[in-house]
Image (cartoon, rainbow, N blue to C red; front, top):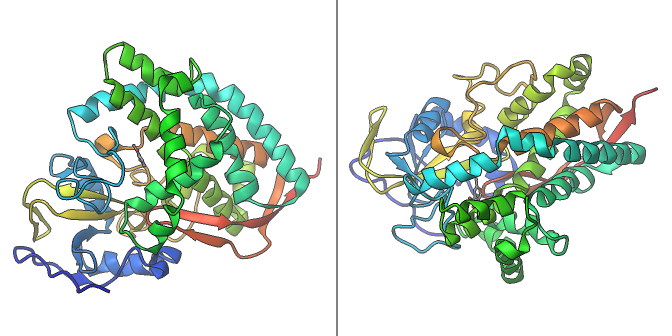
Length: 406
Ligand code: OVV
């Protein structure tokens, strides 16, 4: 392909030829993570000419320091100061204070604990009905028939979308999460049919398309109140539609995968259902749906003896940080009693996932409904990975539920 990019002269740090967006890496990241964590606290990825961090301490610290590691130049590999972004930048993910503070305030109010109490009952009824359905079937593809079904049923309704066209939601998220990485074959394939998908998404963001009272319409209420402008309102609705589906689909799929691999942990949770909510944090730590995000340095910054010069991209390996033995002893072990405080699957600092209460609610309700009905979860064939430049994603997960005897 292209020549390796030389390390900037000011920086003295290990150089790695590993390509974190190659098929091999994305299909099985963990042995590469080990190498990257052990090579040093900061390293240079010469395939792309970006810095990287894969240890928990440095990833966590970089996420906390938005003044030094900014988001306004993009959370992907492209530097918005140099190239125009693939889509108009997010007003939430790809901005810094003061704009971020304003938009974030609106979003966190709409996705607050009080808002979750309002949707909880509807979400519960649907989780219970879906659990009845999949347990009656016995053998299912846990991605197509469960993990995709539940978020796609409850979340677009809560946002207030029309029923028509919802099949565009997952392809759009898939594109955007691919677009944070390089324009490799994975990205290109996902954007092959982009036009109608993107058009549909943008159409749904205007006020007249959104059911009054839903999360989307509430964004527009903030426009009425003068908190945000019209462009911000439409783009914040887009954020919900982009970040709210593929992430939770993979969160649920990864949870089923984790429990299918660890029957003792499913049993432990049935013996003590109070573990359900915290078990999701262990799923997120062990198999993080969002594996990476970039930041851009706003100044020369010294990290453990390396100076990262201003204006460089830094790739933060969230999934690797979550399996750093320096932070989490025996990190490969999936243990729902662990209480993995400090995991960075939802990020950290001012950009910490603003929709995480929705994700937590969805997973809690699905696991609760399944736990009442399912004795054992068995994988009936190897799962098939779906490669994505950012997401740890499963394409199909054939499983069998054995129902509890009543
Ligand atoms: C966290 C996240 C992922 C993808 C898109 C966005 C946010 C957005 O705000 O558009």
